[in-house]
Length: 200
Image (cartoon, rainbow, N blue to C red):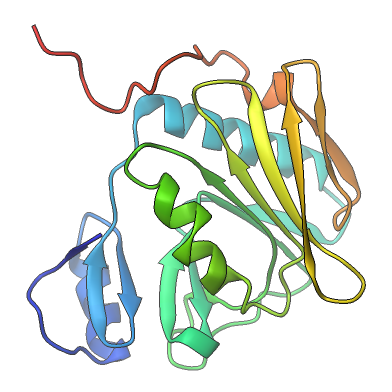
């Protein structure tokens, strides 16, 4: 992440105003504003497949998916951020200082890329664990048919599951559905990260 627009402390109200006027997305963390990396075409294809599948699968079940423009508030860390897809069940719980930010995602998906994988697996994942509502966190590779699922146990601890292979399925137990990887990667050309355009 890079600081934008300059290195000083902002209020949440200033961040909201800045974000409304910006074409790019930014995170807010304890008074600082950080630009978020742009996404590749393949990244958007995978995220779009996940959202579309969940939108159909969850219809009438009291849960619904939200795309990458839905801001998420992690109040314990004073962090406002965006995921690639989030599932919220029941009514959206809104942040007191930012009514456009949700505080109660049950499932979060992040599509990995070279520029964001370290953050998504590390610090951002640590932040997400501060969400009391969160039950499952899914990291999705865009190079091969592989996902990492973290899920909260009954005792509150987090466990890890690796699902690999286009013929496999991702069991999302907290929302009662199974997402086939073949649907997650529908019409997606897998292989080395295509985030950086090839040079002549």
